[in-house]
Image (cartoon, rainbow, N blue to C red; front, top):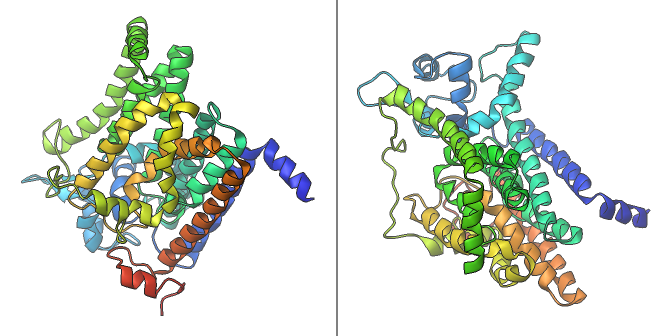
Length: 446
């Protein structure tokens, strides 16, 4: 039986992994909300991302005046008036319009699930209000869907350079040894798993563009690029992979420029689609504020002169490597990329420090309440490439087994910490070293 299971795993690793991840994800979402470890799904930042949908399609009021009246009266389940300011909408200057500070990319991706909830609510004769339990759970499962889809696409991206065994080990580590699974379940209405999906899909299209040059890859790439920008604008840095992919020498740069010249019309089509997607956000800003381009995060800012790089990477409060130590494989993995995934070397070398710098420069470098540092979730495709490069670059079976063992330890550690976060032992923010050590073996709050 054990041998048959191993053969099945080696034959269909992607299918089995996605099935296992999806089942665990469904169990996770049900557990979180059935046990009221957190509620409702549409809350905090997720509420701000989601509001576009009920405003446009149920209340027909993108200025949010009608929804604001409901919020201020506290009638929407799970969304007390105290969350209204925190979740994004604020009155714009002297107008009567409320402005959602979060961009609309997440809402656009969530739209099919929102419409399914509308249909189900109509058929079952339940309130079509956008905030009933049916809408809440559909939004939660939307995030899990895009996380699962992103994992599947990333697997296909990795197949171009790496063996199935390497990818399987990497994906176990990246999904369960980081906070990706947490944001696919507990906080699945936040934007991060949607960005993770977009990053993976964009890499997939970039591979196909430079391998085949067909127009059918340029078009969705333009849409994906636009969605990346209007989901989290700083994630526009990821588009560097579309520019620098495969450029590892001056000869390759000359070939790339020639490729762009020969495919200028196709690139124009993609750029136009990208502009069309971005224009949706600009149109919203114009209607609400009278300006095509605004900085919607009023009172918030970047401090590029004093980036908190060490805190972002190593602090007990939210440090990337502290809460997801498996990602330390990125560092040695970079040394093997030129051999095993050469086309990614330049874009990773440019993107990674720039992304760390921008994230570290945000005034709230810890990014509020979160499990680990949530701003790096979308970059997991990059981490997976580094992990696979390291794993295949190891010279002996013994070293690979050591890496598998370390991955297993990291997965168990991160899962344990995640469960402690779910039960409230680990606070949303401001964890200290003394508290971390003192409560390490405690799973339920006293």
